Length: 216
Image (cartoon, rainbow, N blue to C red; front, side, top):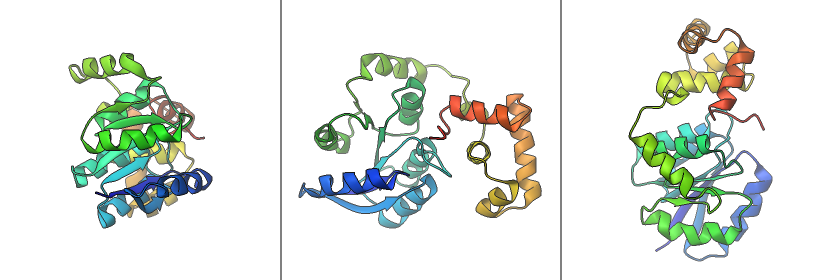
C-alpha cells in the first residue's frame, strides 16, 4: 500500500531536500507541499492524503493549529510533526491537537521512514531524545486542565494572536480572514483582556512562549 504524503514546512530548501529522499521509497508518494499552515489545511482538504508531515513553526497558521484542523476535517488523516524544537510545550500541544508523532529534524532521515508504518498504524511515535518524560507529562496533562493559550483563547483568537506576533497589520489580518478592520480590532482587545496583556510586544512574547510561533 502506498502512503500518500503532504509536506508542510516554510523552508523550501528543507522540503526540496526531504522530497527526493522520500521518493526513493516506492511505498511513499509526496502528493503536495505547502509553505504555511493554512495552505497545508487547504491541501489536506483537497487531496485527502494518508499522512501530513508538518513543522510546528509555520507562518499564518502554526503547525499545532493546522494539525487540529486537519484532524477535525478528516480523523483518518495521520499527522506527524517534524520539528527542530524539543521543548515539551510544543510536543504536548501537538499531541493534544491530534498529531500521532513528534520527530526532530536533526535526527536521521531513516528514523522518519521507519516511523511511518507505526504512525499509519495509529501508534504515538516520539523522537528518542524527547523520551519517556514527555510521554509521562502528556498522560498527566490529559488528566488535568492546563492554563495555556489553547485553553484561554478561541481558535480564531489564537490565529489572530499568531498573526499579530508575526507583525501582520490590522488591514492584512482583516483581508486574510475576510472580515472588517473593526472586527480584528475587537478580537485583539478581547485577546488582550483575556490574557491581561497590554501591548503588541507583550502579545508577541506570549505567543512565542506558548508555541504559537517561533519567529525563526
